[in-house]
Length: 287
Image (cartoon, rainbow, N blue to C red; front, top):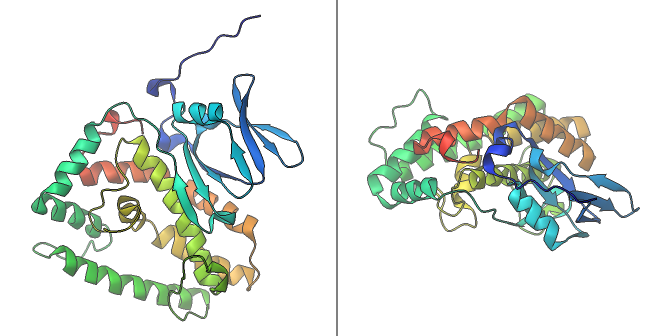
């Protein structure tokens, strides 16, 4: 009996804002079997993966994937992220092809002109300073306001949840040496970067062209992540620090993070905010 294969096109796929945020997988294999993508864990259990309804797959240690599976994921516009255990480190991601480069060209044009770049930065900061007149401020001046705001945010959240806070302390590659609030902040931020990377790629944009951040691996991802860290990463990290009472629980963290992404409708909001900030049409991308 012959099988019928339907070629996936962007109009057949769910919009990125309607997808499940991400799945974290480790110690297993992803392959294509019977025309579908499946996960085979270390105990040989086989689980079908509905890749067209997932924004991103986070692949942890001990994970292998076949060429055919990567091809299927690319066609389904499901981003692949290679991460450390529990997303403690964000190593790399795969770039899926998009239908056109219209939005990428607009991003480059905005970045290339000092006036338009400053205006994009101003739009980002207005979301965090709605009652402050930012007109006439330079990018450096706005970054100074943001630095002070974030430090105060950490102190306020620590006070709200009754957590001892000695400042943000993170050494790359040595996350286990951090205290629990800092460790949770790093984990939540890494997961947030993966989700935002999925949205950025789905919209035909580049993660490498940032308007605020520069000289870092994923500047535009970091630009957009800062819009949501307060309600996603920071508040969640401090609230979990109180609940866990110094006992790190990997499953509780990921479940709580995914639930917050869903409850706050973050995928839809990222698409909407990026479209407004860069003045691009959602209909012109795969989101």
